[in-house]
Image (tube, rainbow, N blue to C red; front, top):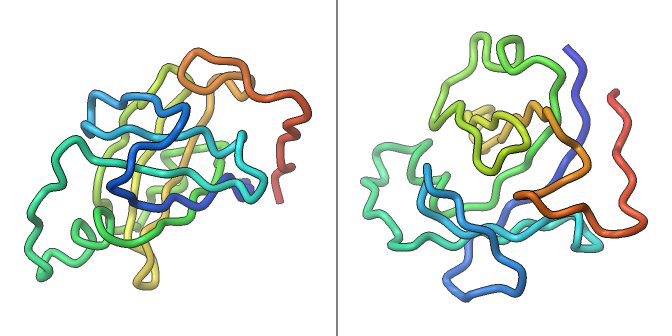
Length: 131
């Protein structure tokens, strides 16, 4: 399986410019391709009350995550501890969240690398090559 860094996701409670709605998880997200440090802000419609004993789900809603573009979601998820997904957040492919080495990791298998929630990526955006 090939993978490449995609973004860092940061939970927030403050509305951000350019948010897109994700019906499946009931959050608003920003386009990390529009941020110079590849940051995505995630804002829950209603932050869920998650028992801290459910470590993966609690971290998903409360801590940042790191996201990687993968060429095979099936291979990326093999042997991993799945937290959420896979699902299509905005018409560009599948995403899934896992708990790996104590960190929330998002895997993203794109079907469209040129758009984010139906909008073209910003001018100058360059795809990070697979490693």
